[in-house]
Length: 456
Image (cartoon, rainbow, N blue to C red; front, side, top):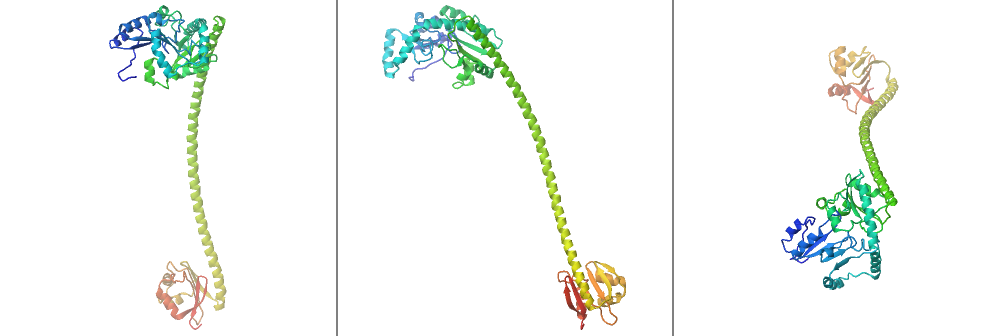
């Protein structure tokens, strides 16, 4: 479109908006009646008169009415357009368009058409001629079938509204009767509910086919909102009147009477089936939601139980580790006890070679059979004679084993339990040094050292 051109949309139904718009000079007024998809009717005679008064060319899209029902040229229009794909072809088997006007005007369009290459093939031209031969008969039957079906649908509780110019409920029915010789085969059916309800209705139909065309021998239906959603947003659809629950139907060629009654009954059954299926789906969805919630609760319980089992396992692992530590400690103790028992047995065998007469055993701070030993211990320690003093000085908390053997005329042998080759089991290093002045290490058996008097 050249930069100096501009286009605007106005509601042509009353003529008032068109009259205000034509206060600005215009070159073309483009009209459509009945309109697609809402089937609004334009007072063509009034709108054409306003356009001519303003010096504008008038173009009328007459696809929905066809020349069989409405003659815009006879009402003063300069050009009328037809989508020949629809009623003129009549069989949904060609794609074509028709421009009709005065010879002078068509001659000005001819060169442009030749340049653009908009020329029908011979086959398409023949198909269009075939359709034109039966146009009047087909449109008459379309009118009758659509009007009877529209009246029946208007009485159904599942239907909120039916838009068809032939119905007395149409707001421009009187204008349609005055301007047209029939009302066409297209109607709008507004289903009670929402977008999903209208979609279920369309998909539940068994006889009509889902397609966006019209004017052929088949019954067609389309969910209008679904068709326009790809090119218009929700606000644009609201302004255009394309409600979510709006469907468009184009009737087929059928004889009136019993066949149409059966079709209407089937449509009623289909509506009832669609609503019943919707209710079943809603109930199923409610059941699934409840099952989902129950599954969530069970999952929470199982998660808590699993956490508790994990905690129990951790505690069991800790107890098992503690038991293993205790068992290891007991094994160490047992091994030490066995080692000590073996050493004592070897010591006993060694002692028999050095003479008999064990007088005393000091074990872990406990004195056993101290008879006749006090003097010997006191001599070694150089402390006053006395049982309690001698035991306290020799044993303390560290001495584990001392075996003293006494003879009548000789110093007794001394057996000392030595830890890590250090005499840290005795009260002092001085005591050990004093022992070594009178005794010499004779033999080491396990953890025991055997000292004998010097010269022995």
